[in-house]
Amino acid sequence: MDLGLDGRRYVVTAASRGLGYATAAALASDGAHTLIVARPSESLDAALVGLGSGAQAVPVNLTDDDAAEQIMTALGTAYIDGLLVNVGGPALGRALEYTDEQWRVAFEQVTLTSLRIIRTLVSRINEGGSILIVLSSTVREPIDDLAASNVLRPGLAMLVKDLANQLAPRGIRVNGILPGKIATDRIITLTGGTPEGLAAVEADIPMKRLGSPKEFGEVAAFLLSPAASYVSGVLMPVDGGLLRSPW
Ligand SMILES: NC(=O)c1ccc[n+]([C@@H]2O[C@H](COP(=O)([O-])OP(=O)(O)OC[C@H]3O[C@@H](n4cnc5c(N)ncnc54)[C@H](OP(=O)(O)O)[C@@H]3O)[C@@H](O)[C@H]2O)c1
Image 1 (cartoon, helix red, strand yellow):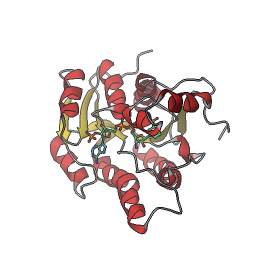
Image 2: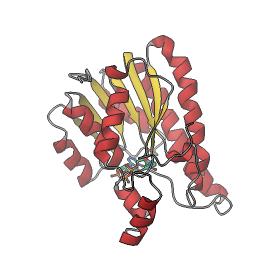
Image 3: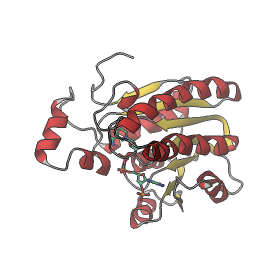
């Protein structure tokens, strides 16, 4: 199937590694031009090389208050066809053990950062374009030790519905994507990095394995593409069946 991505332009945040990079790679492999964002690092330089000549990178710390403005500056006068809103994952911790300051940091990192990016860049999205927010299976089921994700991601899921309603008349679709356990650096760290830790996580997944970043990126690229032109306001799990509930 032709996703219709050839020559289209996308901004992908938190994209030097992991889910963001996999999405940028899937978009680029179908002919899209990507502007990837992450903090300055060798990974960002390497990611750019892997995305072909149509790609650009801008080093930005997404938790800076003016991160969204920095991305706008990098865009110049260009318009885009879509935006993957991805942020660094919040720190581990349980709800009753997080301090006020940890809650404030997590809210800024996950919720406020996502809102700022969308609020600033939405004026640059072409009619027919798309916003996709990276959420988590925690939208539907809590994960022990990930209190900030359990509490904050469901709020962003409702932001997906809110914005899908608001932006549909402008011809912009808004969706959420819910990774379960995808084999990125973060998940390897969260599983403890041991064969026993990994086996315990995999045992709970009906498909009995982690997803690959490529499997995630291809679904994300589809939702961002014109091939999904009548899909708006959905929360799409990519989780090998991890979530047992139908909604
Ligand atoms: N992997 C999964 O299965 C899974 C499941 C549920 C939810 N998620 C969520 O999905 C998101 C991405 O996860 P991942 O697994 O891809 O993580 P990852 O492999 O650790 O990659 C994180 C990416 O975010 C960038 N990043 C982190 N903090 C940043 C900041 N302050 N400013 C700019 N860029 C930043 C990193 O680049 P630099 O560090 O170089 O800046 C890197 O490119 C996270 O929010 C995570 O919680 C992932």
